[in-house]
Image (cartoon, rainbow, N blue to C red; front, side):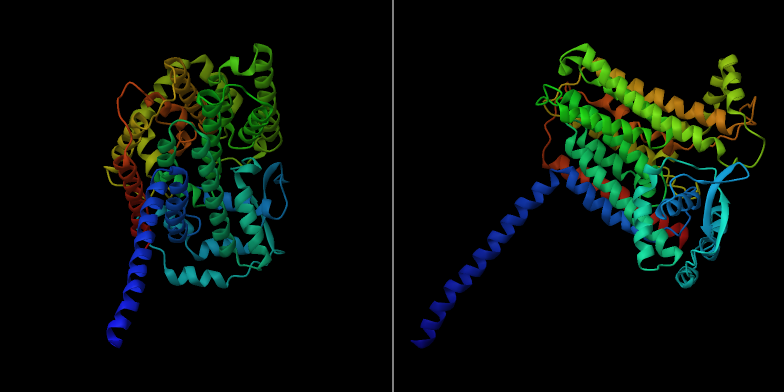
Length: 486
């Protein structure tokens, strides 16, 4: 009788445990699908996981031009906004220990030798190199981007100063804070846009985007702010609940214009995304045009001032002397020759698509042949299927694509007149264009594929497939980096 009474007492407890596990399991399923339907959370989780792997596995200095970005980030971390000048050329007074660290980990050897490998012992030994911030050397710079591009990296390096960290720790701290800042902007971008949420999700996790965001490069913040600007314009233009532009929206537009004026120069043109917004939402044409005029003035003041005060003093590339003014005149006088040369360039470099998607590192990590077409096909398919009741007219889609093309053309023109020798041809041009330069305006280009005439209703299958594909492309990137350097 005693045993039967004990079993009777245990049975309810066992039932309670099973019921508790059942409730936990059901709750986990509900939370799982809640998460799967919200790309703004997924981009942070996936981006943080694989971004940490990328920034850890990529040796210091092995993102394109990263040594220059490290110098600019360090300069800002010690409170110097405007670069130093010496003999009429801008640059930075850097602790000698940074150069010692980069030499120790073999930056020059790795970026030139395609098959070279990083030695983990050299990487570990570089942590023993002290900062010694007082022992400096002036380092000329050919990259002088506005300070907004380096704020997260500078914050990370400044925190490293508090712990008296060696240069290599400061580099990794700069990478980490750059990644965190980009993911915060990714969250905001996807949260506010009424269209292309999953397209933005994929664009932020594209191999090149995530790689640049996990380095000290200025490209991560440039891409993130360009995407945020596109999303904000989309919100004001297409959100059905936004019937009237209010004072807070005006402040948001002014903040966006300030950001566009403080990132890499060609992308200030994205301020013209303003014209996606119907003028009726402002109440009248006068307020509409006045708002844009103020935005454009902010961009011109900040972007123009930085160019005039700093960039013109940047150290030149090795080779012939470049004369931007004369190169621009030569291009205007001979437009057909210029267009013929650029057409040959685009054909020879496959429209820079491979570089835009997956050529990470110093162009020395060759992705598999299928990566670019697979990723672009996924992007186009998702942009075409990811839609709801939001209407986007053909005229606005056409204008958005035009803005993408004009901004991309501006990138090509600016690099031609500043980097190519005077009277250059296809054989003499240096062609410093890289596919990653076309990422910032991409969101405007992909609005072309937003088409409600395609009858498709998103289901859980859509969310799972897109997420799995994004993870697959991230895994591919990590494997490529690990195989290249170790």
